[in-house]
Image 1 (cartoon, helix red, strand yellow):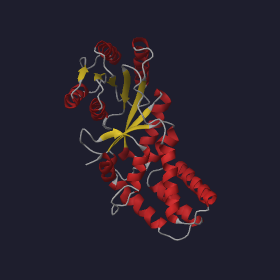
Image 2 (cartoon, one colour):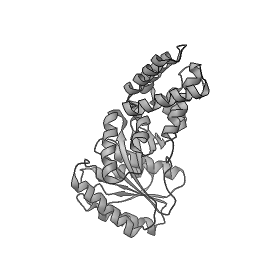
Image 3 (cartoon, one colour):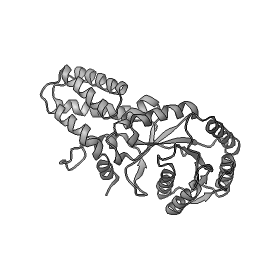
Image 4 (cartoon, one colour):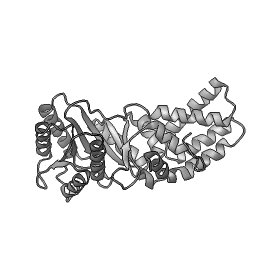
Length: 308
């Protein structure tokens, strides 16, 4: 099964509500004010959020007027294009140096450790040499769990004992990454909540280690979010962004939620791109985010045989 097919299947819960309502709306014959009001309500109910929903509807109203569009089918395509444009930009990881550094954060339960393993698998499948660093030394079993995923992905891992200094683990991982000529170093970091000062202090310390030991190296700071929490995930991301300077979002568990509309809101409200999305339990079910593919999968009707 291609990832597009997996993505389409993974979005079923979101599509059951959002797409069905959109299909009913776009099957109407007239594009008038009531049409726009209903569209905004559908978007909000799909966890796109009030602010972003309002922006999408206003843009659609302007484009319909500018194009002289009277057909709801054309309006549907205009809506898709607006959403694609809103979500595009910055999706690709910056892996421009050897090594490149990826730091991964996320509160407990979002799938952070699993995500790191799947990301390592994706990168190695593309010919990258990847090294993991187990710098979440505070959570019980975090190191062991990451080792399991390192083994599954077929990559090496640097680890210390539980309770060790996370920055020391990052130091050793970067040192090993340089010595072994690794392409990518991925470090797990503690999943403490955003309002705990020690997390921010720890991240600052880790950043100083990277600046000192890997000067000039491309560095990604990725936050893992659980899509099933909808707008709560967005609020969580805002707090982490304000405190930690995020470069990207990894959105997991899209297959388990009817709140997939939050994907649309994240880039627009945060100004932080989505780098990866996860739509299943398999090791290959985490894939780089593609805005056009996501929107095509979201809007495609089940009876249709191909992408629109």
